[in-house]
Image 1 (cartoon, rainbow, N blue to C red):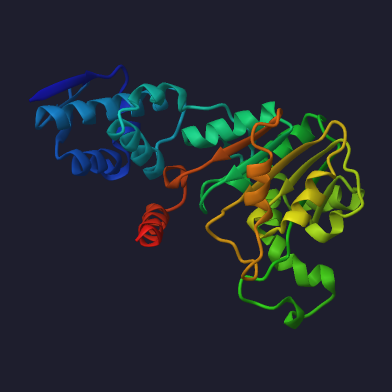
Image 2 (cartoon, one colour; image 1 turned 90 degrees about the vertical axis):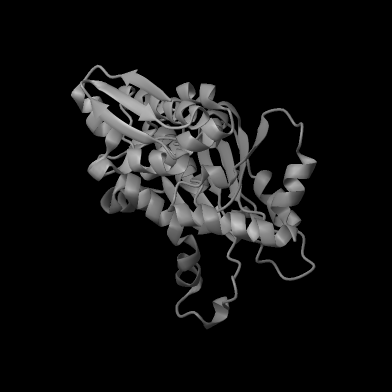
Amino acid sequence: MEQVINIERMEQAVSLFGSFDKNVGMLEKAYNVSVVNRDGAIKICGDPEDVSKAAKALEGLLMLINKGEELTEQNVRYCMSLVDEGKDEALSSLAADCICLTMSGKQVKPKTLGQKKYVEMIRDRTIVFGVGPAGTGKTYLAVAMAVKAFRAKEVNRIILTRPAVEAGEKLGFLPGDLQQKVDPYLRPLYDALFDMLGAENFQKFQEKGNIEVAPLAYMRGRTLDDSFIILDEAQNTTPEQMKMFLTRLGFQSKIVVTGDITQIDLPDGKKSGLKEAIRILKGVEDIETVRFSEKDVVRHKLVQDIIKAYEKAEKR
């Protein structure tokens, strides 16, 4: 069977095929079809069912190109996964608005339906729990939304915090004072902020008190008004710490709590505050939980495969 997709401009075909026809090569391999560009039309040949799927994926990718998206290995694979699940109608809602620009001029925007929902919930709710595996953009998108709110003067402060729980290492053996000991634990948060604000601006805002990156223990006894607060690696909080943190919420503030409940580093027998909070606060108005799956992973494809392999092993 052969199916033809007409394209309006040569640039669309160039973007669609990608460098060395890499994008189309992925489709051909996945669906066992051949795709050629001839006389302003893309011809797909193969078995009827495979051709139909490949055509849907290509139409979805063309729609992304027309909305100004740059095709990457990640969004080509994601398009194919939506088609395979019969969710190709969702492709039209995939292209999202830019949240903010990084210092290098790169647009930060959600790349999957899970990420899109997460960003919408952060915008519309006061407290959001983002739960899912590594590489789903939970922390990075939360920091981007914080920077956006800060730049728009919707909040006066960005507060980033993490529980300083060792993943096998001991804090006491690290050199320096308490701040220097916990800084390595806060590094992913610093990295995201440097990316969006630049090291110089970050330093300036930190000195003014507009940005604070601190371990969770520093939050006790405070009321955080007019702030965008992110608690990262929340699976490593105890129920007492989580309750303490959530009750810091002040007026005109937002809280985003991120974590991966498959990576709990608490001592045996200790309950995760994140798991408990999601259970207890289910159904409370203005609080939302967004769950990510391995399909929302926007890192290397191998990260998805690793997560899947671990999930299978745990089920066995």
